[in-house]
Length: 314
Image 1 (cartoon, rainbow, N blue to C red):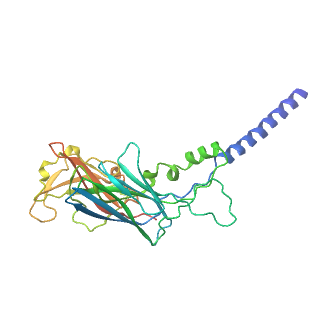
Image 2 (image 1 turned 180 degrees about the vertical axis):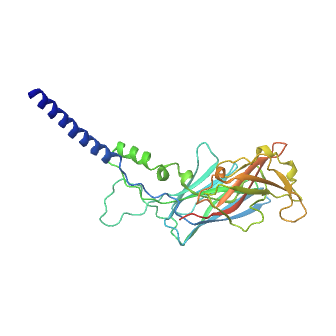
Image 3 (image 1 turned 45 degrees about the vertical axis):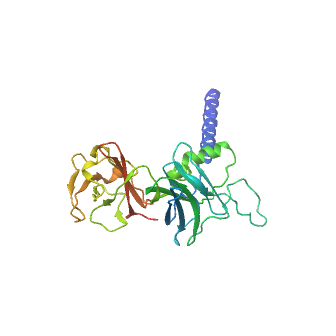
């Protein structure tokens, strides 16, 4: 009987310890995820000037934060075709070039002063010159020998991420909150503007004929037609159809869907494809979609059109 009691006591103790461990484990993995840094309505206005003497294009951008945005803008990034020179930034901002990719980046690095009586807890502070809702900022500029074409921009909002007590807490935050702690360009508001390019700019029309920005439901399971528009300077029959990709998901056209049709009634043939909407990979915050490809001679082409997500909650 004594042995049975000892065993029972041991089992009870093991149960209590297992519960304590479970509670402790739950306490370790339960975190409150910061907001995604794309709660923004963004407008990027480009200005391009060409100097005949230097043979350089000067690109200048004005970034506006919508009045209904929930965050202040703390970074503006832009794809480009190198080389670039004479980079400039607004006061309170710094610029640089992303490693391993041709993307320029500007960030509001000059920190705002701490409120009176506040202690420095090592969290990343807000930038003094962040773009507040209903405000805009200009002065993002550089020079390039390359002509303008459609390029992607990436804009992020400031998120106050609470500091973690230890390395384990930081790792838990990264594991539990990939939607708000991943790579900045993957979390950004993405759109189209003008920048230096190496490719042939082409005009595309999504859901022809359609108004711009084109409404697209990211949850749709159907097909999305996209036309590459022909012009007096670009013959769409030179496009290598197998090279065409569309959207963040690099969707390939539906097999056999490529055909010639004059969708805009200008008397010039256009090249029309059908894409699986889920494969396009559009996010609710995307404001433009890009189509890439090549001509039959191997020259890159790229085009974009503004879109708006429908069936989404901001």
